[in-house]
Length: 306
Ligand SMILES: Nc1nc2c(ncn2[C@@H]2O[C@H](COP(=O)(O)OP(=O)(O)OP(=O)(O)O)[C@@H](O)[C@H]2O)c(=O)[nH]1
Ligand SMILES: [Mg+2]
Image 1 (tube, rainbow, N blue to C red):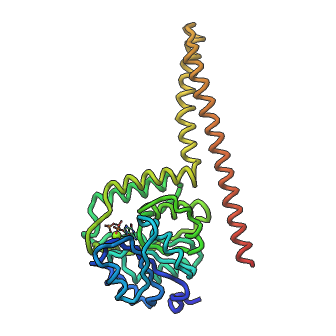
Image 2: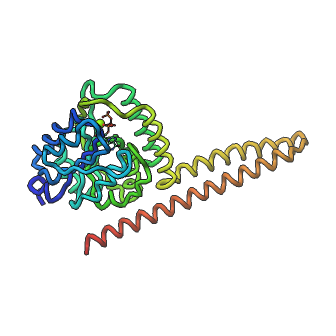
Image 3: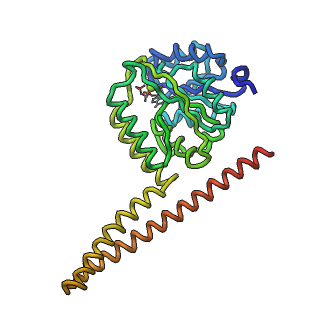
């Protein structure tokens, strides 16, 4: 299917907004210029008080007020109004060039569940500290999930609607993107990346350093749910290694110097046994994860044949 001439049958553009009056009109105009119609643009507002909603309505696009609070709740609300097979998400602050929506969709059509727009920062678009935080969060995510993603926090992506519906929306606010990435990389792994430019935002910045810490905490929570192998392995090693070292030390004194350290010996045994069991648990988790991936792949093949 030719993606570019079927955009409106394929995709809804979801724009979450919270006080984006400076940018929203330009964002909508830019999306319209790609050939996407008013009816396929959904602005999900989080209670703006600056006239964002009036501007969006005047542009003739669909505008709804989200249920609950935060960006994640806005995406969850959007799902109630979307009936296209793909969703594009982008900010209402004019940072993400809408011309990439068809490009991302075209990539998704090659068989990806999630296509992320990887930001190339235009001069002045993001303070150094935010870029640093962003890069550390990516590294952290990649270590815990064993991935090589470049921009998990990008606010521009195209996702298969059915895959987005599978989320529990356990994470709130700006952690929605990491929840989505964790879900996809831990199930089908069908993620692609496309480079895009990131422009300076119109309007006031709302994201703070504290949000960065919340995202790191949420990545930990998501690791427990989606990929506990690494954490259980680290836990196991951090018990087993001191346990074995202490055990060796106790044994040395028992056999060589003749001094008996009973309590330390007991601690060494407890640490070693607990550590060993955690390592076994991580192996079992790895095995279960592999089975899950195999079943999902098979299911995918069967569904394609139907
Ligand atoms: N509906 C809704 N939208 C929100 C909420 N919080 C933020 N947004 C919107 O989500 C998008 C992303 O938020 P931004 O503040 O731009 O966050 P960011 O892109 O990480 O940070 P900047 O570099 O400042 O642009 C913007 O369009 C916001 O207006 C919310 O609670 N509800
Ligand atoms: Mg933004």
